[in-house]
Length: 398
Image (cartoon, rainbow, N blue to C red; front, side):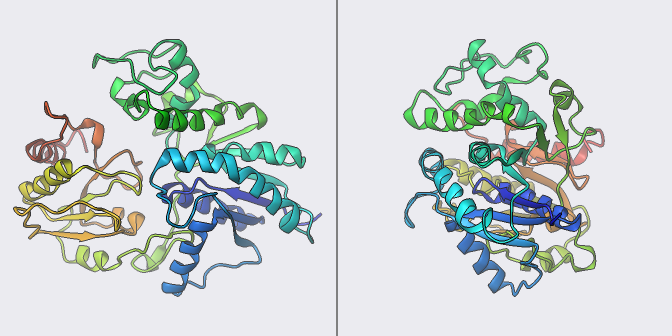
């Protein structure tokens, strides 16, 4: 019998690629061969980044990077989720089937034993089914996120959201969404509040397609642990926690690079952190898809100044906002992308200001939905200063 061969398919976003790449590397360590399928667009960035970083750690005999088109042109905006989701669903299934038939499954000794797909790429199970290949789904984020998507049909039936993704809840009370689903605050549903727009409906329909394919696989995997998410995991017993999917860097923590990382990391932030007192730095990062309008960008910048603490702020290279004139940043360092796992494990970090990331390094998190918005819908600079002060001075929170 040959080496078990796995085809891994992430959703094309850095926060989705990283956990599945880590799982792929773990599978290789346990005797598997993996074909890791990025979009052509992301694949070029991964390869380019590896060349720039002089990364020769990839053993292509066991972990091979391949790619297929996402259906978008080189100048299309891939931050437009509705356009991206629509193109993925209409173009990639046929491209994946072609890749598997012509280049992998029926060529040489590479017969695929299993497809591991991101939950947002659940359509890959249809392709596998046509070829007689079993599949597994991986949720790269929390079990709570999985539970929320899993229950979208119930949320619609119960009138919590409408079929276009518009949020119908108007109170701020905590509600029991439905029997068997963890108690949730309405603010946790705010990502679903896309409004009654064509774009919102496209994204919601795309997300719902994976719930329709869950019965096609025996394996529902999640990048989490029982200790962190007992309630949502208990509500969906079939969901298996295999996280946290993190790499161990050992003594090379300052320079090691994760395979699959396609945003160029500014490693100068590590030496800057070395110069800061232990437990003093605010780390601020909101992922690759989160974008603020100019007003909120101003408040965040000026709020960081107000904290009077050293901060490391990730401002993505495609950011089109202008820093306010009053912004001093005398205690801060701004980078376009940071080696996040290495940053979070650095002793200088005191707090992580983020949108919805996970816990892995014993740091208090200041999440976006915990911050109270003013009458204009903004998180003010004063609110940011207050919450940072609160989270860093409250031992119970730590």
